[in-house]
Image (cartoon, rainbow, N blue to C red; front, side, top):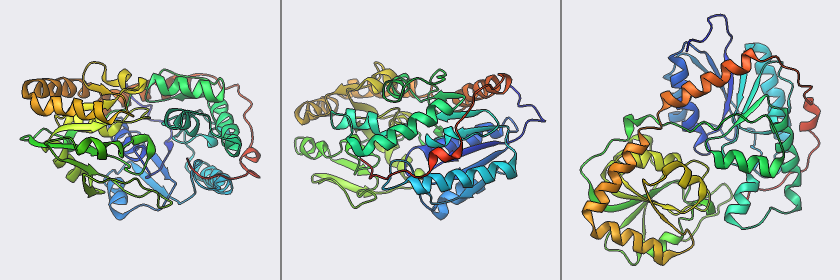
Length: 383
């Protein structure tokens, strides 16, 4: 599929807070192979020098950096409105052919070109998965803004059918496209000689990842559990992680080496709409032990052991089984890697290209809301 030479650039948003960053970079790399120019607008916080360097390696990507708050952060709505103005100015200067938004609210703006919104995660589905309830009244403004962004977009997709269905359940109907599974560049995630330890990774402070339960499980195991990732969240929150060997935040290459050496990767998540870290571990040849949730069942099918996220004893039992049964461990690792190799950046980019082309060829008849809907809103802290 060839991008028309007369077609303008894509304006894409991203943020460096979680997996959206790696998702966006992998997609940008692949789109560059189709001679597509990307204007990449980053929000959430200022980038680290290493993150700027990652973008600098791609000649077809021009980076625009900001620290506007994201929708789920404390009192974000003035920033969300200001970010809308900033993005509008960028669009006026860059004349994109299409906007690809990896946040929700700005889908409500009238871009004048087709607008795609990708829903990677959201507060309402997070609350229901992690807390077992809907968020309270202070989050109603968030729901309104997300609903407007979704309904204003020309198309909406997500990295799993589960996530797409959750968005429709919590925010009403919108122009849904088929889900597009994420891909991951396997270069940094290759199997090595396996050693007798277990690895987990991600935002260790995030209740959704449920890393704290591993503290109890680890006490019952003959192998150590190493945990890579940021321990404390934006507001200093963090779980007690006794019995785990903490590695801190690792660069991609360093994390890849740890995954390559780990025999088992465990993530007993309550909430994981796709799970790029799991994909990385599977590429690196780890056997997988995962939280038994619908999204991870959708992605990994029979290529993992699934455990109840809230049951430390059963998590420990699954890990003990793999520690004691080398043939099963190796067979499961092989199956996980075979499954992981299906989730390539090339396949993901091809699906996005097909969706872009469909959007560009479809007449636009929506009467979209104006920027006014992004202003004069109350704020609220993240979950």
